[in-house]
Length: 412
Image (cartoon, rainbow, N blue to C red; front, side):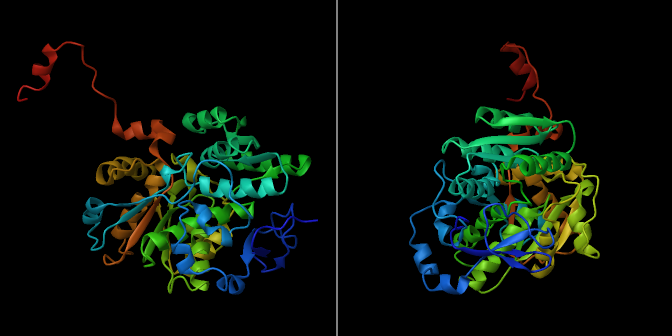
């Protein structure tokens, strides 16, 4: 017998549209094997949940949105969500924007990553199913978020990562008790190996772009933006994109709030991908078909050869009337310092790609300067210090001698 998934009423296939009842081990469409979206009876929810009742909630975490999440209770542990919006007037002026650019700093989450949103909901779903071991494949952030949030409730984690994952992320995994399997290969190979382990051993799989409940956590960032902007929907939301799951989640959140009557319009989405990992941007600009790419980029969190939620991401870009751009690794690395000095936010490469992509979109004439724009900063720069140092450089080495001060600073 299946365990009820909170307020969810079924799983809708992204490709064929089939609605399937929620089942304990159902991750993808049983008809065509495509990804599925968690669906709710929003008409019924309107009768018991309103914008006014939400505003009165004293909960400043993503669990304030429990009525539209696929679980029945919050996950024990550190608070996730309700991250700050940081105004970046210097960056706005640099681009000639008439509205202040806002950065949604999800590096403030417990694992210093946006991926805490997905892991919290997926872990709670696993817990409600009675599962005690959760597995997943990740370039680092999804894995570390899972390990960090699994610690307090005592859920075991077994994680597959490519051996090239940044050391800071590996340190998080091990410190919080995860069993880490470093795969001598790419993220895509680690992903496939994790899926095979799930098939063989029945472990609960948290993989992004496979487990539909991860998207439910990610959509909460859109809910927060609506509230933090006093229900004034931004014109453009900038999203760094790897496998496409954040993008599809952001879009799902705005669509659900509109259908509930909480907002009266939807934003455009700007999908930003690294040049070597741009399968989704290429598909959205072309025939819509996702084709594998090299996946090579310094931004490990968006390094994907075959995006696992690509179809839903392309659909989100098109439905929003949005667009995509690609940026070089050089531009991504430069963006780390630009965001830090221009807005006081330390972003890892994938997160800094938002700013690099927005700059590129402005250069291409795709952005109206009057738009109100929010860029997602999806991970803290301390997650990948080595990349930051590539452009920041090294400190000046001096002797412990006061005499050197006059030499270095003759004018004081």
